[in-house]
Image (cartoon, rainbow, N blue to C red; front, side, top):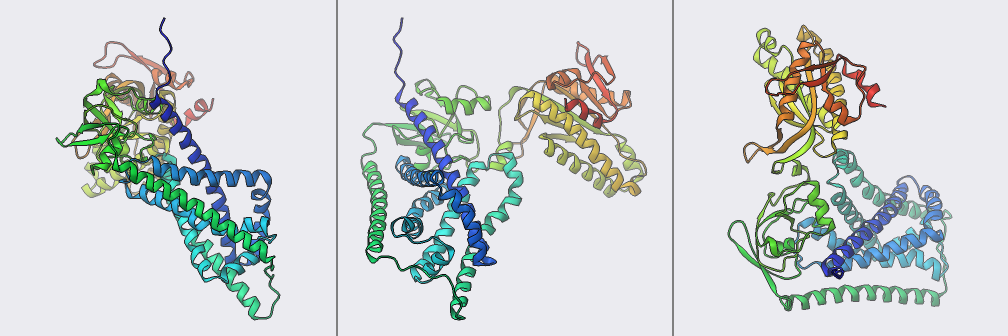
Length: 566
C-alpha cells in the first residue's frame, strides 16, 4: 500500500491563484457597483444640487449602513492589496497595452482616492462634518488642487473599471452583442458626472453671489482637523511605502533571476529563449519580446495562448484543474498546453496554435483541429432559384440572393447557429458547436422557425418584384461529426464532415418529396428531448447509407413551438 502524496506546491499555488482571482473579481464588482451609483449621483448636478442630495439620501442608507460600510471598505482595501500582489506576482512587465494600462491606473487610484475618502467619510467620523453635496463641492471648489485631483480621480477610476469589466466579459457572446449599447453608456457616465460636478459648483457660486442662503460648511475643531490631516498623510505614506517595497523587491528579483535554474524554449521558427524556472511559458515569451496570443490576459479564461509541445512533453508537470478544464472544453490533444498556466522546469520545443494578435471576435475563426463532436447539422436550400435567373437581370438575382442569405445569417445568429458553408442557393449551418447536443438540436429547431419567418418577411417586402414567393427546404439531423476549420489558411471556415452531414444533406431533398418546409430526423428529435409524434413520420433509405433513416415532415416550422415549450 502506497503512502499518500502531499499536495504539490504548484497545485497549491494554482489553487491560491484561483482564490485570489475570485477575490479580485468579487471585490472589483462591489466597487464597480458603488462607483457607478456614485457617478450617476454626481450626474444629477446637471439638473440641480438638490437632485444630487435627494439620491444621496437613498444611497447613504445602503453604503453608510454597518453591512454596507463593511462590504465597501473591505472590498476597497482588499482590491488595493491585490493590485500590489499582482504587481509583485508578474515575472515580467512586458504585456499588452490594455493590461499595462489597467495595472498602472489601478495602482494610481489609491494615491488620489485616499484624500477624497479622508475628506468625506473619514472626516465625518473623526471631525463630525456632514457629507453633503453642498459641503463637499464647496470644499473642493475652494481648493485649486482638489479641482484638479477630483476630475482626474473620476477619469482614472472609471477607465480602470471599464477596462477590467470589458476584458472580463468580452469572451461572452451576449456581452459582445450588447457592446453597441453598452459603449455609449460607458462614455457618457463619467462625462455627465463631471458636468454634474461642474454644474453644482456653479449653482453654489451663483447662490452665494446673489446673497442667497447656501448651506454653509461647518468650522470644525482645529485639533480634530490636524489629527485628520495626520492620519491622511500616514495612510498615504503606508500605501506609498508598500508600492515602493514591491517595486524594490521586483528589482532585486531581477538581479538574481536564475537562482532556481533556467529552462530553454525552442520556438517554432527556430528561435531559442531562456527563462528562469518559475516563469510561465507566456511570461517567458513576453519577456523575450515574442508576441503571443492571450485574449483573457493569462487567466485561463480562454484558450488562445495554447501551444503544441513538440519536444519535452514527458518532463512537464501535468495540467492542474483550471488548465485541464479549459483544454477539455476544446477537446485538445494531450500535447496541447496553455502557455499562461504551464511552468516548465526542463527544456521544451513548442508551436503556437493561434496567431499572436488574435482578438475576442476572431476566436471562433482561429484554426481548430478536427475533433469528433455531437452536433446538429442544418441544410437550407432555396427552391426554384434557376427560375429567378431566367426571368430577371443578373443584378436583380444577385440582390435577391444577398437578401436571402443576409436574413438566414441573422436567423442563425439569433438562435446560436454557425453559418458554415454556402453554395449558390443553399447553405449548411452547425448548431451545438459551443453547447451540448440537446441545446444544439433545440436551437436548430428554433433556427428553422426563424428562417421561415424571415423568408415570409422577404416575400412580403419583395412581393412586387418576385412574382411568386420564395420557398425553401430545411433539414436538420444530429449525430457525431468531425468539426474543425477547413479551407485556405487565410480564410478558414468552421465546417463538418461525416455521415451526419451526408444524412442531413440527403434529408433536405425529402422536403420536395413530402411538399413540406422542414424535415427533422428522429435522431435529432430524440437528442433534443422533443416529442414530434404529432407530425407525419417517415422512414426511408438514404443514398450512401445502408441503414434507413426515420424523420418527421413538418409543413409549417412555427408548429414546432408547442413541442419546444414542453
